[in-house]
Length: 346
Image (tube, rainbow, N blue to C red):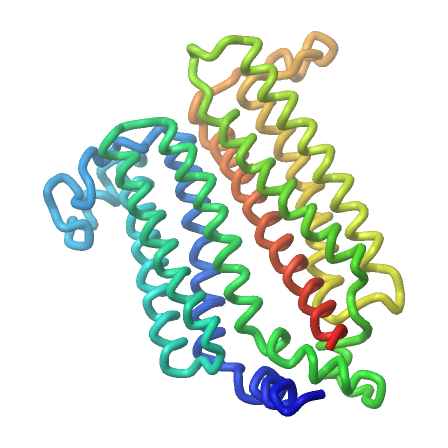
């Protein structure tokens, strides 16, 4: 190993971890999930234009708009204005992340990455504002897709700022000679190339499924039946692909002697989330369109579809949110798999 490589390893393994940076990254990632959930409610209830102006709220500064007005002024107003406030919170956390990175982060590339995160959240907010200004469903669909993309970016930030990421090389080198709990948690043996590639494919397929679901979710009454059914078939096909990929990943992460610590849990969580997502997808279809075999089941025949009913809205929005969890966990698995490959090759 050259002097440069030794110095680089020393920085990566000993000095680069910052608790403050990782804390901001974790809180930012956690904050994005309720943002996606409330954003899903905005679409479910058609509340995107409950506040017709932007960046203000009915002429008020968004942050000074009286809480009693939007908390008790109708559910559509509450979810739309609440969505804006949650988005602003993510922006504030992204600013805090960048400041913490400038102060404490040793890796120059990661400082630039944190700047990218801030620009991404600003762009997402502007995209939401354009959706309001133009009152365009197309921008609403794009805004929803980029929201889940930002969750993946925030998740990646949390992974790359973690102690696990920083010390993966050191843990891997020590794993053969130590049986401490820390080493058992951080490293065993590197992830296989097959697992890393499968995790990457799973992430790509899961995000494509998000895009397909967004198109299906934003169809209008003027959509041709053939176009609608084509979207349904694409969505179902991608669901099958994601299921197969998640089963493959789960099989790879449970194989003994093939794991760098931190890979097994996200792989199994993904499989659980995918099965939950399939159940929620079926429930979403039932609450939106009933089922084609309802004449065979009197209980379903008596079910009345209620537009924007409470449980119907919860099910549909949970379907969107679970898709976000799959994308987030797939991001974790993908990055950890490739990181273990990278440290093993040096």
